[in-house]
Image (cartoon, rainbow, N blue to C red; front, side, top):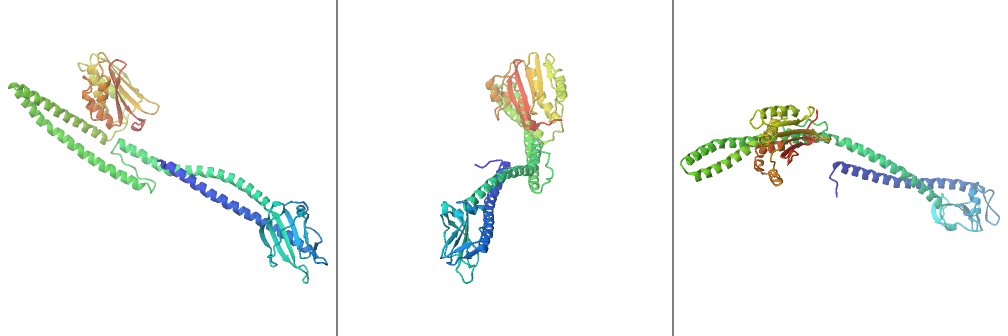
Length: 454
């Protein structure tokens, strides 16, 4: 299964590519080292062979003899892995290291140059064999000069080199993988800026992405800006049409209401009741559409910077306290002056005004407004009262997608449809709970991505 993260794909691809390259380098360097030490052995054997040829003489019977053996002490140690042998038809002379063994004689050995080959040797050893036919006396017989070296020593040296090289290349792989991670991190950094700008565009459709500093990302930013322009135009057209339709229906509904009153005055009570129900349903649809239009306007207009919720809450309470139902209540406010929200003031006033007014209408003695900012930057505003509240089944029904919140419970539904639309428009979350005061607690939360700190 392929990882969904582009970063992980690049890192895994880079790590695999570097590993494959270093593995190929390990095999190639190991082979080159083995060939190098073979050439070194060949050079040493050739040097010893020339010493043998220089000291070589033929006895009267044609058997080979030497005045002095090469100086390497391994020629004197039995089964040491370094051997020499001189062969003629009359006899064979060999190094003490061969003891009672002999090197394999090849009748195809030439006299023009030294030949290096592999051959099985004494003491169950595989040998690297250097040989050539020489004629020490122009009138005498040819002598087959052979020198051999045990390949086990070459393999041991090659294995040690391969092991040490493998450890070095493993460390190099870790270093190069870390360098690849840094490269991928730096290469993807412009995408983080794109993500932040897309989030800003989501909060405020009037925002546009700045010109990219990287040529490869510039077509993406232009495409996103073009898409945002098209979306804003479409939303504005749809909002205007919905608002025009809703406003256009108000006059016919008012006329129908007048007809209903005349019918009721004329005694047609059943017909008047039917008209009133139809007018109420149509009016509710119109008001719902108007609230959606206001929420769409909240989505499409800039936030206007940061606002201080504490000051606006106090002003709203001052208005509600002048009403008949608010004058008898005690309002408790806990809102830090340092708290800031990236919302338009009119949206916040409409949202909190509806919540505070609802709580005041159905509270007995107390209304409490709390605000807090969590450690992760999320901001929560809550409005509580000590009224009758809403039971759990009706709360769930009230928050279902497509349900009208003003039908969620007895009394507490007034204005909640508008609140719900505005909360969704500002990327918040609305919840209905049981208050510690005994009534309803309405909490609205905005995550850190939808809020800005000063």
